[in-house]
Image 1 (cartoon, rainbow, N blue to C red):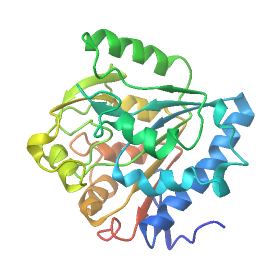
Image 2 (image 1 turned 180 degrees about the horizontal axis):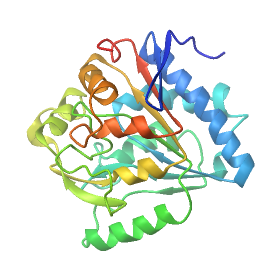
Image 3 (image 1 turned 180 degrees about the vertical axis):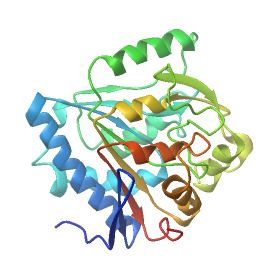
Amino acid sequence: MPEHCSKNRFFDRLAVEIYDNRAAMGRAAAQAAVRYLHDFIMLRGEARVIFACAPSQDEFLHALVDPAISAFFIDWSKVTAFLMDDYVGLTGDHPKSFRNYLRQHLLEHVHVGCFHSLPTTESDIETACTRYSVLLADKPIDMIFLGIGENGHLAFNDPAVASFDDPLLIKKVELDGVCRQQQVNDGCFSSIEKVPKEALTITIPVFRQATRLSICVPGSRKAAAVRSALCDPITPACPASILRLHPQAIMYLDSEAAQLL
């Protein structure tokens, strides 16, 4: 059954739905995702999707792979999956890599037709990023499943490196202190010293050009970033503020993330 939404509001073009808790938020996002993915596959015979990898996505991905929600509606063999970002230098089997996260939360549960991981261990990162950009640009990206950071970042586009008109589709970036501390706050690393300093990330134009965006943002630590993204000026100082201009985007919040609205 569809989840009960306690509030439904628009901020510019961005639809925002607020749910009582993280589980309800995740189920609602997954139920909508299944409908959209089904429609893309029926329309074009495939769906090209980019996934974020973070604790903010736990409830969404748990619901998305639930057979009761998706098994009879999505032909996963028709889905091509891309990784949104990952740490430079970490191998795919490293327990802290985002590839490992996506494997545990998605790829071990459903069998996608193709998965493109990021080239984080390549000796020539620039050339590897060019190859990945070709894959991204080959056909339209149908959906991106994402969150936003405590500093308002999208993927690893922190305020200092974010560009709404970036000429690149993917790039190597240096993570700022707030972003690295968030990885500790999320329980991904025991201390900021252990958080990698560099990552590969898709850039903001990739989000802007995707057909649909599904944005899950739970927790009180995201409340200030949510308010800034939705209520302050649209500026790279809060990269997530650009989401308000996307024509087909929905932000799913739990009550804690929405507490400052």
